Image (tube, helix red, strand yellow):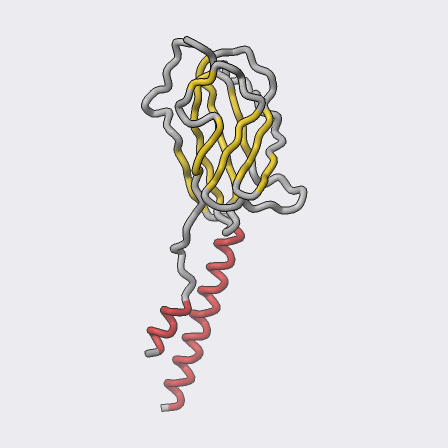
Length: 164
């Protein structure tokens, strides 16, 4: 019985992580006119910490030049990154690293093509990819909670043993 109670009190690692739901421009699309911004929409709201920059989007043209301004704006489940003017046609790479409300960090990338008849087609590998990782703060909370529960269970076991 004690073991069942103890197991029920251990924090679960199973929780939903946000994912990229959509973007403008969309993954593997072709745009004839250079956009003034990219907009990424996630499956749940993103975390903000006042004026701290914790959500990032970088956009690079086919020459590898960064064309994003670095001033991502978070509005609930959306992050908007303004773009600098660009005349280089071809494949455009969008990288992102955002923090979900639950503290999990999600990073990924996708591509779109700029220019009519640019002759550049996205490779099959150039699909949207995401990585989920725990922030060190959320891991610390799990470790501290688990350690506390283990110590309490050991103390209860010692108490029960001495009582019998």
